[in-house]
Every structure is written in C-alpha cells, then in structure tokens.
Image (cartoon, rainbow, N blue to C red; front, side):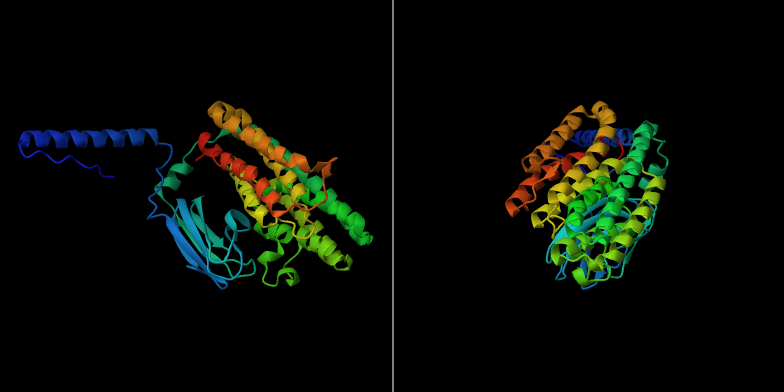
Length: 396
C-alpha cells in the first residue's frame, strides 16, 4: 500500500525534504506495526485481483473447468450463459462447502468463500452435468488458521445441537414412514395431509442435512435442476412425491420413491450422528439456508405443486432459531447490539408468518407473488444479520 507524499514547495530546503520523507516512513512503519499487532490471529483479506475467479457456464460445462486458488478467501462470480436456471456448488466429497442457486439465464451471482487446502469438485449447472475440479493450495492464511487454538467455549452448544439433530432426524424418519404408509394404502387425501409435516421436519435440520450433496439431491432436489425435469430418473425424494400427490393425483408410481426416501433418511441419520461440526458452521449454515430461501420465495418457493411454502418457512424458522439460541450466550457478551438485532429479525420473521396461521398449521390457499415477496424480506434481513455472527465471535 502506498501513501501520496505532499509535493515540496519550491523554496523548501533539502533538509526539509529529508525530514518530510523520514516522517512519512515512520508513519508507514507505525501503521504496519499496528496492522500486524491487531491482526496476528488472522490474515488480511487478500487482494481482489489475486483472489477473484469468474466461472462461465455454457451448455453442460464450466469455463474454466479446472481452477486453482490459494487457501483463504476467494470471490467467485458465476455467469450463466445457458438457457436454464442453474446452481453452482463447491463439493468436498459429498459435502457442500458453498453454493449458489437460481442463477437465471444471462445473469450472474457472486459468492465469497473461505477455503482450506485440498481438492474439491464443482457442479456445473444441472446436477446431471459432468463436474469440474477446484484445487486449493496452502497459503500463509491457512497455516495461521491451522495453528488457531481449540475453541472450547463452543463445546456445550455443539453437543446440544448434535442432540437436536439426532432427535429431529428421528422425528423426520417417523414422519416419512407415516407418509409412506398412506401412499402404500392408496390414501391420497391422507398422503397429502402428511406430506407438508414430513417435509417441514426435513427443513428443521436442513442447515446441516444439505451439506451432504448426494443425499440432499436424492431427498430434496427440485425438478428444475434435472435435464428432463419431472421425467428425469434422478428426480426423487420429497418433490417427486409432491409432484405425484398434487401434479399427477396418482400414488401408483410412488412405491419405489417412498422406499428410497426412507432408506436415504436412514443414511442421513447415521451421517448426522457422526458429523463433526466446526463452530463457524453453525451461523454460516443458517445464514446460507435463509438467504437461499429468500431467493427462492419470489419465484414460487420450493413446493411448486403443493404450495406448502408456509410450512417450509416454519421449519426453516425453527431450525435456524435453534442455532441462534445456542449461540446467544456467547454473542450477547461479544456483540450485544448484534444479538439484539438477530432477536428482532427472528421476531419479524415470526410476525410475517402470523397472518397465515390456522390452528397448529397454515391456511391452505397458495401465496401470490406479492405475498411471497413480502415474506422474503424478513427472511433475507435475518440471513444478513446471521452472516455477521462469526466475525463478531472471532470465528473469521
């Protein structure tokens, strides 16, 4: 970084010029020392020119399809030059590191992600497209991160959240089995009544469940992300069931679908049981999920056939609120103003759902575009506040 030096007056002596130069050097040295002392536990954000990557999706490939970046923060700009709305993901095996959904044709989305050294896969638009490669090389930032001491203050919150995940995964399995029983009995009305509660149970654990890319694709992917949409063999899970219940009014094709869903939920339970959750993933996963929910709502939400957007929102509210409640004792000490803002955003989210409640559920009438846009506002505002939590807690 350079600092402009004042031009010397024509009459200034050589001694004055030397003094001014020396003062400037001392100031720069002082600033450098202050920067180093105040940032010894973290590296400064890298320069955008060195850590910015543009990925263009054309047809069924990404350009470039093989990317190398240094560990630390990288900003990816994803440009969709295909004729379909697409998603772009970074995968560590089956785990989702970061993603962007609903990138409209002719548009782009940007995301900044903190990456550790290693080799990753990238999805290029449709889930059925070939994957690209992302290599992250070690850097000074990653070496400093590896030396960071254990964050024992989060042990209690993480243990309680693991218990929450286990209990909710069990409730999800029970709800899906009840739905499967109705399907197998040929009871369309009962299956419709049980679909939204079962899907809502998944939404409560979605901040972590969606980290498993293979399972989330089979359990919760929408038809939009498959080449043949509803006719694609890869289109399974909740939305395939929803399509049969509300789009086809036919339970006959669902026997293998519900059987596969039950099997996938069983695998999900086991993976969640063994999931090692770093503290920074709590707030970041909640924020990422809510941002995606807010982006999806104006376009019709997630349930295109049964229009259960409100039940889904309630599940997302409960799942992310649990995370926020677990972090509250730490955040209220570190950043009380931010904690107050997070509480206010959750209250606004809950208040936005209130007019649509009916008994223990929601009114069955589908939302119109204006209502979905209005609901998206408090969800997005909450996502933005939760995105600030890790920095406030010293986790970035």
